[in-house]
Image (tube, rainbow, N blue to C red):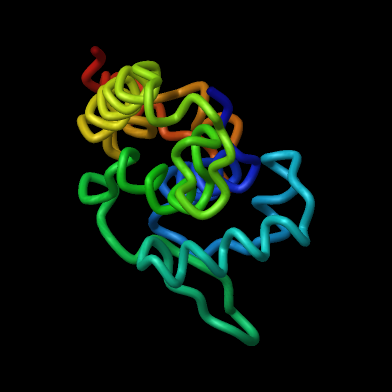
Length: 158
């Protein structure tokens, strides 16, 4: 399985905003910190806004920030939102399925179960789990110097 670039960028944008949640950030800052194309990033930010993950402001002092608390942002939901229109396999796409084995293939049901397990696991993870107490991430993405007090906390791990 491989996630699309836009899903990967969406996670990076949210992590950047999560690390800098007290500030409005600019897409150019995110692009530089996350090694991303400004054009791709703009498209992803637009989708993030449509899905209600970020809010944007235009003009002087504009930029983007989280629209919800990091603990309320499910990584499973994010991945579903961004991957929903990308079928995992040809047989998952009713409109374009040309597989001659479809009616007799059992692999399809096992792949569905595996995908359900994948998303179920990611449903347990929030943006807060990814950013809180993650000193390395904070050092890479923080606009302001990383506060030592925040680095002593640990997020829940699986």
